[in-house]
Figure 1 (spheres, chains in turn blue, cyan):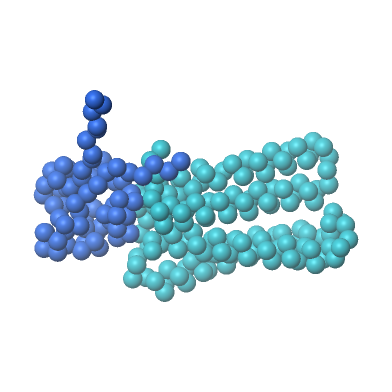
Figure 2 (figure 1 turned 90 degrees about the horizontal axis):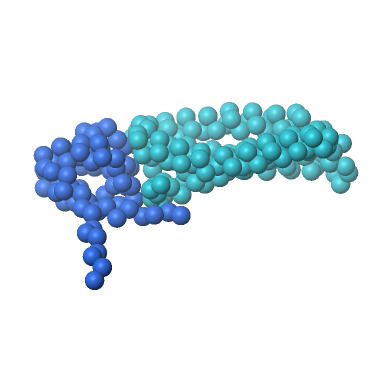
Length: 76
Length: 142
């Protein structure tokens, strides 16, 4: 059973905010393929924790600014 | 398209064609007669050997023609590869078990060889399909 990831990200907007960094440039910076960056941006692939930190380091920001996870609903 | 995905497409298409060609040769040779008596060894070896060689050659040609996309393999490719191998190994196990049972039943070598070959083919088919599905869709969490 395929579980889609609940993790969302702001990588695309961060790339544009950082001198219009291309997907290829970001991929090269963290050592993955451009296709992996595309998959991450589209929510089709959850990067490892280490890769997530590397992405945040490229944008010189915290992990929370790059990746978001929905809050758990509190049952009433 | 990732380099590994291109390889998956090539392997899948070549594998299906090789198996289909082999079946066609076998059935033509049998010509309605006994399958068990039909010579098959050379055809199976040619089918498997040609599939491997053609897959390698076509993969190299595709890599050269689309070299702008690069040939790098990263962590996502490795995860997809591992997932596809995990998914497909069942057919290998079934084929091997069936061959074991056929051997214990002392069936003709023809059936033992073909149940193993079928296991190889189905395993390769499922691995290729799984890889492509994961590349096209999403990599699931365990």
